[in-house]
Image 1 (cartoon, rainbow, N blue to C red):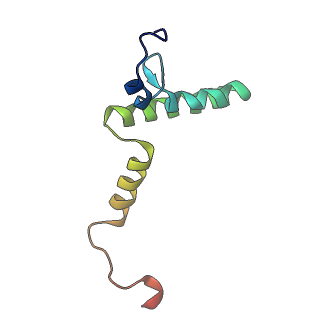
Image 2 (cartoon, rainbow, N blue to C red; image 1 turned 90 degrees about the horizontal axis):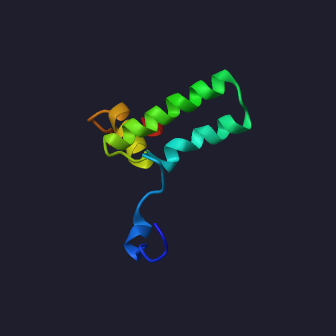
Length: 84
Protein backbone atom coordinates (compact mmCIF):
# COMPACT_ATOMS: atom_id res chain seq x y z
CA UNK A 1 0.00 0.00 0.00
CA UNK A 2 1.47 3.31 -0.98
CA UNK A 3 0.62 6.80 0.23
CA UNK A 4 -1.97 7.29 -2.50
CA UNK A 5 -3.95 4.23 -1.36
CA UNK A 6 -3.81 5.19 2.33
CA UNK A 7 -6.85 6.85 3.82
CA UNK A 8 -7.53 8.49 7.18
CA UNK A 9 -10.06 5.75 8.00
CA UNK A 10 -7.23 3.21 8.09
CA UNK A 11 -5.65 4.87 11.12
CA UNK A 12 -8.10 3.15 13.49
CA UNK A 13 -7.14 -0.34 12.36
CA UNK A 14 -4.83 -2.40 14.51
CA UNK A 15 -1.30 -2.95 13.32
CA UNK A 16 -0.68 -6.41 11.89
CA UNK A 17 2.39 -8.51 11.27
CA UNK A 18 1.19 -10.62 8.34
CA UNK A 19 -2.00 -12.19 9.75
CA UNK A 20 -1.20 -11.82 13.46
CA UNK A 21 -2.09 -8.79 15.58
CA UNK A 22 0.90 -6.69 16.62
CA UNK A 23 0.28 -7.26 20.34
CA UNK A 24 0.48 -11.00 19.77
CA UNK A 25 3.91 -10.65 18.12
CA UNK A 26 5.36 -8.65 21.04
CA UNK A 27 6.56 -11.75 22.99
CA UNK A 28 8.86 -12.60 20.08
CA UNK A 29 10.66 -9.30 20.69
CA UNK A 30 11.47 -10.56 24.18
CA UNK A 31 12.68 -13.82 22.67
CA UNK A 32 14.97 -11.91 20.31
CA UNK A 33 16.53 -10.19 23.32
CA UNK A 34 17.01 -13.47 25.24
CA UNK A 35 17.25 -16.42 22.85
CA UNK A 36 16.63 -19.58 24.81
CA UNK A 37 14.33 -22.52 24.22
CA UNK A 38 12.14 -21.66 27.21
CA UNK A 39 11.68 -18.04 26.10
CA UNK A 40 10.79 -19.24 22.61
CA UNK A 41 8.19 -21.58 24.14
CA UNK A 42 6.74 -18.74 26.21
CA UNK A 43 6.62 -16.52 23.10
CA UNK A 44 4.78 -19.18 21.08
CA UNK A 45 2.27 -19.83 23.88
CA UNK A 46 1.68 -16.10 24.44
CA UNK A 47 1.21 -15.51 20.71
CA UNK A 48 -1.27 -18.38 20.51
CA UNK A 49 -3.12 -17.00 23.56
CA UNK A 50 -3.37 -13.48 22.09
CA UNK A 51 -4.46 -14.87 18.72
CA UNK A 52 -7.23 -16.93 20.36
CA UNK A 53 -8.37 -13.86 22.30
CA UNK A 54 -8.58 -11.93 19.05
CA UNK A 55 -10.60 -14.71 17.41
CA UNK A 56 -13.11 -14.51 20.28
CA UNK A 57 -13.29 -10.73 19.92
CA UNK A 58 -11.53 -9.84 23.16
CA UNK A 59 -8.92 -7.18 23.70
CA UNK A 60 -6.60 -7.47 26.68
CA UNK A 61 -8.51 -4.94 28.89
CA UNK A 62 -11.86 -6.52 27.99
CA UNK A 63 -10.52 -10.00 28.74
CA UNK A 64 -9.19 -8.89 32.13
CA UNK A 65 -12.57 -7.33 33.01
CA UNK A 66 -14.34 -10.53 31.95
CA UNK A 67 -11.91 -12.63 34.00
CA UNK A 68 -12.40 -10.41 37.06
CA UNK A 69 -16.18 -10.62 36.86
CA UNK A 70 -16.02 -14.39 36.33
CA UNK A 71 -13.81 -14.88 39.39
CA UNK A 72 -15.89 -12.50 41.54
CA UNK A 73 -19.11 -14.36 40.78
CA UNK A 74 -22.66 -13.18 40.25
CA UNK A 75 -23.33 -11.97 43.82
CA UNK A 76 -21.71 -8.77 45.02
CA UNK A 77 -21.51 -7.80 48.67
CA UNK A 78 -23.11 -4.48 49.59
CA UNK A 79 -20.72 -4.04 52.54
CA UNK A 80 -16.95 -3.95 52.02
CA UNK A 81 -14.97 -6.79 53.62
CA UNK A 82 -13.18 -4.39 56.00
CA UNK A 83 -16.46 -3.21 57.58
CA UNK A 84 -17.81 -6.65 58.42
